[in-house]
Length: 173
Image 1 (cartoon, rainbow, N blue to C red):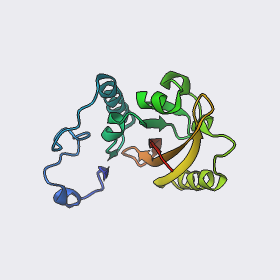
Image 2 (cartoon, rainbow, N blue to C red; image 1 turned 30 degrees about the vertical axis):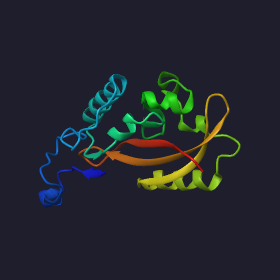
Image 3 (spheres, rainbow, N blue to C red; image 1 turned 90 degrees about the vertical axis):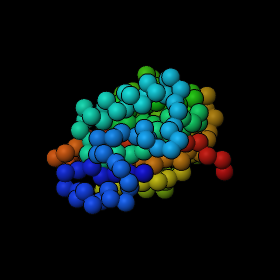
């Protein structure tokens, strides 16, 4: 779920969502609430603090990705340099989040990574649009896997692009 919380949005936009507060982050009031492990809860808190620091005006419902063992949340800057990777990133790729920081997500690509998918992702990023794709990535040990990725451009209150948020999960063929 993607919410645009910019000041330009009319409050009627949220009328069909029931009780929601623009500052509510995640699924705290969902039925039933999503329970996170201690390490995933730590990731969640880090992402929330990062979002507030960067001034994101929209919110992406990423909490489920932190709950799943084979899912990851990755935040890059505008140059696509990784600034945060959740602990699920290591379970999925074999790379520790600290290793990934400062690197490009291209570190996961290899010989069978689809050129046309890479181009689709690149075009959407240049246009600052949301993109969904399934791409062949590679783990640290060299094993390939299919990764479903949804990438969201994240803007601040003066409509500057400040980050990209990627929700990633391993999929079977």
